[in-house]
Image 1: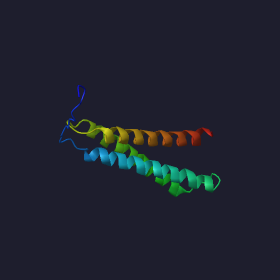
Image 2: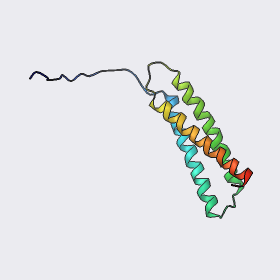
Image 3: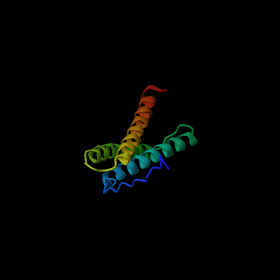
Image 4: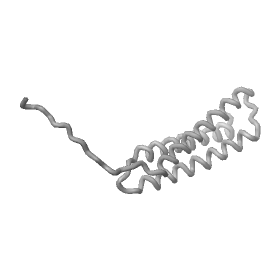
Length: 109
């Protein structure tokens, strides 16, 4: 019984910031909208409707708002930061995908 370890419990009052959770949700919505638009455009052999452009525009706005919310949530003290990092990552990924789509459309990739 020389190396018997005690179980230590740490109780904390940390919570996930609501802004961070909303940032993650906006990232998932944006990526889902982008995937839907890409799938529907492939289904019609590259002929995109104007509604798809509006959907990508809204996904861009959601992603920008998600990055801002994630950054604001990261500045809060004594909180869990997993959803902050997840939201920022997902939204930057969505913005990168939209940027690539615009680049590919402009230069014919």
